[in-house]
Length: 526
Image (cartoon, rainbow, N blue to C red; front, side, top):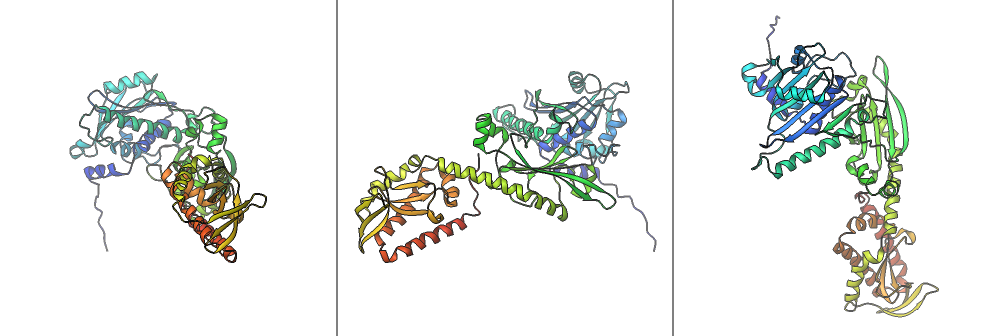
């Protein structure tokens, strides 16, 4: 059997157009470009994202790294560029600059000045010319004037400018390209980008963090400040070095877990703006994964758990170096990893106790919020409505009260029966209390002279149904009316011989509701 070899060079136009759909969003695309700047030794990176007077999007990234000569420019625009000599470099696959840029623009201009004394040169990769030029790159020994100006403005000598032209996938085509709606869209991108870079390059941006080289990044000439998800007075509950067997050698990944203060604790310590700065919420809980000190994934729980409000206060840090790239299956965009089963099991077991501690702190806060709620204000509409309607609703008749024993005698169709009684001001039919005996949700009781119902704020139903709806007066009134109606029905039907039956019903209902709301999200701590 003989075989022939055939050339299967990919079609340039189809490949380059297909790679536009790799899945980049603007934030990850810009972060990929900045990776190259840091790999080139830059300590200052300047990002510009604006609209010009005609409504065209202007985007560029300028750095003061070592720069590139003509050969370097050609290599940089090659799909699958030469491997960097330093394996720990943030640039990994040799694809990021091209795929990130062409995801949003059809023309990529790369201008650079290196230390060899040669003037800056510009290389161009234009998707519209690929059908004619194929894989060939245009290099001009004279730098584009715009990019030369950026180099002069932002660098003292060497450096590189990445600039996009013919941007067709960033914002929609507005009727007025330079109007308020277009400017608003760019502003939203800029704000989101600033937050993303602050998180992704936190260790580089923080001058006090010695794990990474210090780099200054600005967006539209406004510096980006580091955002440390594990600051804000967080408690570190786990700090472990975990060995990973690679077959021929063993290396280490580092896992830490933190529990953040609750919103009220942050406000008390650092003022009202602290919770917003800490970004408390569902979307910021989970594992933050760092490769070579750069955030590449998260926050989420790596498919081990869902993001739900009980664990809002829990954040974990998983760090590794380039030696574990294969074990973590880092993707092209350096924004997703996959843990194999053995590593996932180790992480799962290690993070379970800190997650429980975070849940306990969160629930303590929810119980505190429920206890601190202004009951008269929350239930006032219900009390007013029930007072107005109760006279037209058949009910038992109050015979007498005994404050010392906490009982009252009422008469219904079955005779005289004793029920619970609490002293209160007039007009109260619904009263929320810290806790009721046996963990029940509600208890019929005469509140002063009124047939009423007492509701336990420590029951999960109150936490997960009442608290999320406290701003909705209609919903609270509906919930209160339902429980009051159940209590009223019990007053009309109660007999000494059936007292225990009604108590068992309340206990079973409360237990069932506790189970039914178990998987409902608790109100977000924000």
